[in-house]
Image (cartoon, rainbow over all chains, first blue to last red; front, side):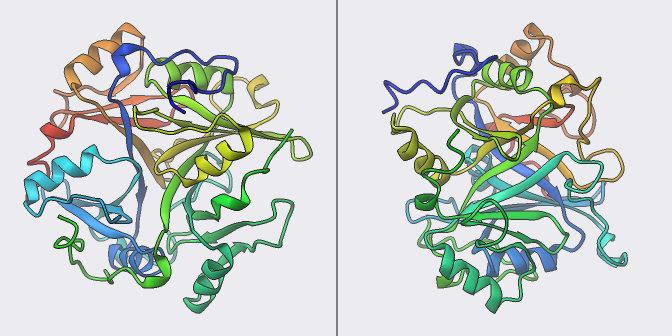
Length: 180
Length: 180
């Protein structure tokens, strides 16, 4: 429990300083070429909802903040209150759409896994990996790795419309992953 | 509230299908050159704890899963149970350390913001942006943008040890951001 577990100790790790109280990882941002295509994919295939779109006319871009709504989420209807609420959450996905990018041909963004490497992937937890794989097939999702392929069994990787990698795991199958 | 708010409607958006019930955005993965340096930075400057390290001897890499522990987090002590718990959470940060990368010179990973673009940044919400800026200065954090710079007031960007961009915002200051 939290009173006992203060995090694993590894070289470099320090206890969380008081100055960081209330810090929270709010989102990860991916550039998307065509928001209509990305929103269709993430809303249908992964069940995400748009909490907030913010438009920046002068700078010619829009932001979309997405989450899987949960039963106890108390989402304000009022847009300004919803902006504040959105930035208080944990683990959202943010899209940046630079206006006009959807008119370019083919994939235009780098997924981070070819050279030069850097960013790797986002990951969804799902209650039933087998059912999720069937759902992805039903929706013609492009697989990088099916659960039975490769050295990491029960771990799936698919691609989103921009080519970004999405890992998919079932938490109950991960208990013994990576034991040294 | 959730019963009323079903997400903003934009072109492409579909209602969350039943097949996606329980899907949850678990983590974003960044490659890090030297985990000792990255863990020092994210634990001290951003207050994150290591929920779980997983080692893959055959493939010569390790994974670290980090979160800002919160008062109501019920973290299991048992490692296998903690692995399952880790993959059930929302919005973790995952590091991948390819063994030996720390022996290379300089920054070795691409942050996604120079060409070729793709991944943009992660973002932390903080209770007090002014205090956070003072804390970053106290810790010699490299700023990309201070709150008063640029067109987006009250939004901060700093760099992590690999050069990845970290946005920092105070939710209460974001209520009117991006009004069209």
